[in-house]
Image 1 (cartoon, rainbow, N blue to C red):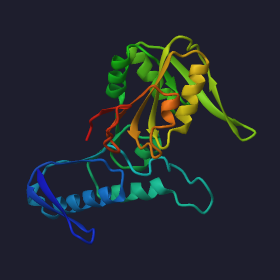
Image 2 (tube, rainbow, N blue to C red; image 1 turned 45 degrees about the vertical axis):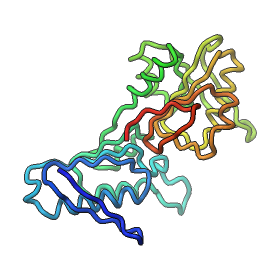
Image 3 (tube, rainbow, N blue to C red; image 1 turned 60 degrees about the vertical axis):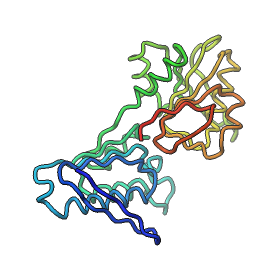
Amino acid sequence: MKYEVKKFKDGQVTAKITEGGDLDVKIRGNSYEDLFRVATIKEAWDADYTLHKGAVSTLTLYCLIGQRSDRRFHEHESFDLKVIARFINSMCFDRVSILHPHSPISLALIQNACALSHFSYVEQACQDIGKPVLVSPDAGAYKQTHEIAERLATDLVPSNKVRINGVPSISIQGEVKDKECLIVDDLADGGRTFKLLAAALKQQGASKVFLYVTHAQFNYGFDELKESIDHIYCTNSYQDIEDEFVTQYKVV
């Protein structure tokens, strides 16, 4: 199946199917415009059943927008991921694949959804470093990182951030002295938590600290992160980054 997408000067997008068959749309998915672009493609595909009789429609989202808003955080606030999931569900794809979703809530809210593993990217980072100790930054990341550590036959050190009298404190539950460490997580917004964790690991004797995140936003740049992190590994699911401090694996 082939399609064309056109964007008008006023921002409107429209799609045209140029060849029938299975629909396979791959997109970053980190903006509402991305989702509307997908909706126009799916609507055009649905419009002529003769083009795709018996065919299957698949949507791949490399960085699902709103995935961290997986609950109603405060009374009277919107449940944003629920709104986004409803929109995706309205397109009625036969399969929706999501790269390294932030939580299982995304898979529960989106119909026919499945997760794409980030294992191969962590594996490439480990091969580049040598054989680092993996570090999970919080309880939410522990299960997936534990599974990766087992597959790679490497050690795992859990950590967590707690606040004492409003001041963030890092708890590290393992031995890291003279070891190279790789922090593994799904997403970096600004990255301050990773900076604090890397500093704490080095205070406990880690020789080097690296960071892997699948979805690399880094909205405040890398200057502060360079104070305690030696190098960053990520995919280009959110954006393309050109910086010697970053090794990026191409998924889009």
